[in-house]
Image (cartoon, rainbow, N blue to C red):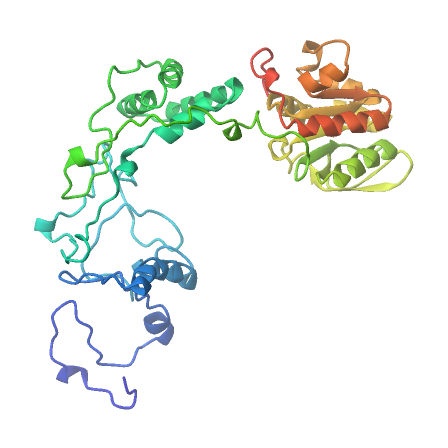
Amino acid sequence: MDSTKIVPEELVPVQPIGKMTLNRNPDNFFAETEQVAFHIGNIVPGIDFTNDPLLQGRLFSYTDTQLIRLGGPNFHEIPINRPICPSHNNQRDGFMRQRIDKGRTSYGPNSLGNNDPIQVSETDGGFKSYQERIDARKVRARSESFRDHFSQARLFFHSQSEPEKNHIIDAFSFELGKVKTVSVRQRMIGLLSLIDKGLAAEVAFALGLQVPQEAEKPINKSIPADGDPSDYESIQVEGKTKKSEALSMKNTIKDTIKSRKVAILAADGVDAASLKTIMEAVLVEGGIAHVIAPKLGQIKASDKTNISVEESFLTASSVLYDAVYVPGGKNSVATLEAEANAIHFLNEAFKHCKAIAADLGASQVLEATYFFHKLPQEFSEKTVLEEGLVIEKDIKALSKKFIKAIAQHRFWEREKPRQVPA
């Protein structure tokens, strides 16, 4: 539009909704021009997309472009981009959300919201691809393999070790235990039974429910507006591979500590030699070591040197680390023994099956934990491999055993016999 030739607004004929009328300069260039989010996927009824590869690629890429250019997913809700005709979908929240949504669900299909909003059928004006003759008919459809909703989940579950299966059962029990609608819990138990009957039975027991004889039909409720439900029903496929060790953490290669994070718990008076020996050993093997203390800043070692602190007990958590080491030093040990957060840090690390090491002089810190008195009285090489706990007076021997223990990643035998209330 030539900005020097402005047509008076009263001379511009009224245009039907859906057409753009260029009749004035923008009042605010940024709001009305810079924020415009054109998208070739926004089309009016009667128009379809060609098979041009460049166009097909841009149908996907334009949304991503606007997300980045305008800083969030709700760019279509700002005034310049807002559609004249109201639209309803399951999009919720995100940056710059304008509409206040009501209702309990933000997904579809759903039972709690009466499956609203539903897809618009062709008879009600919904989009339908033009039936153009090419090598075959162009359809909005997926191959039959997309109806296999359970074989990959079954392979994954059957490939896990028993402790890992217990984690999955606990995770389902935890998440579904927070679902307040019993019918939704029951429906999920039915779906789990299509993966593995044992998995469904364990989760059902935790939720106080029974495994249904059959899962609620239709199993797949994600059906296009004009689709036949029978064409989209889930199918059961038995794959050739029943289990894969590569899918289990317990069965992975255990020969490195690269990228593993080690927490070193220390306070003023720590034995600098033992702390630095372990830290250097971890770094040499490709791991990461952080000193965690009661406060940030620096701690003063027993030899009067200052040691930098990466985290305090207020800012660090054991779930962020793969292993824990407690160095010696009379004053440091006494401080940690009296520090509830340090004891909790160790209890939680033990509960999560992680490697733990301590100088012999720091034994009293471990003695303050819940798990220590439930361990074997004699610590040997076998104890390290089975329990993942290293207590040594010789710092060099401790270093070698600790590195070996970290490489084992987790010590799953702790799962059932000794539950730790951390």
